Length: 258
Image (cartoon, rainbow, N blue to C red; front, side, top):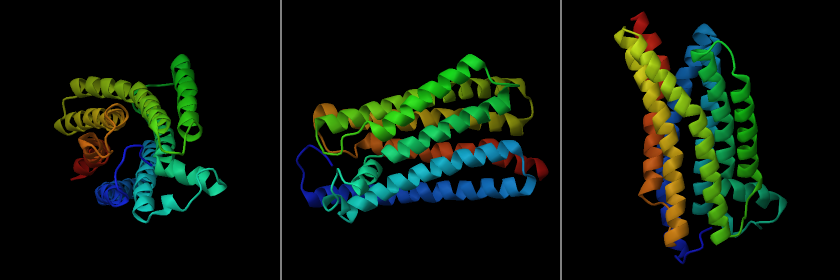
């Protein structure tokens, strides 16, 4: 899938390392998802339901990213025709496009989650901007794609990461700002720590796609193999963000009962 020259065995080794790394990330995400499910089953709270939906889509995005690494390790990318019906979905999984599409859904649900926590109702203008830009980004992520390796394929992928980063920033910068306001407005230590954790969660989620974008830029400009340090930083921020989400929403309620 890369336009630079490396051997098939070297590429497979890179993807194998990525597969192991992302398996660890998925394991942590599944633990958090289980905790959210348990919390929702306990109280059936509407906010917990929104958070559950958000993390279902984030977890699916991680799963499909991991699946793409498994495809390469098993060398399935060499036997499936890019322009076949199967190839249409296969190579979009392989290039993170299905994962980005799922992330767009999670971002939109995060927007609803933010409004329900911090606002009484939706701002109509903001809502339409979010819907229009989010729909365009999701469409681009899933449709505007070149399956054959080369400069154009990497460029289109970089644009997809940029659009997803912008969409994520539209939601999570506001989420971060409201969390900081709430942090300053409460005195109880449990909830101050909770809002601080939500602030860090928002920052980490944006840093995920910033690092993925930088990884693609390095591939594009310097013509080097993928899996730069920025790829690993992206998933490291994903782990931190997942933990902060738990500390920011699930853990405060548990501690309040103790």
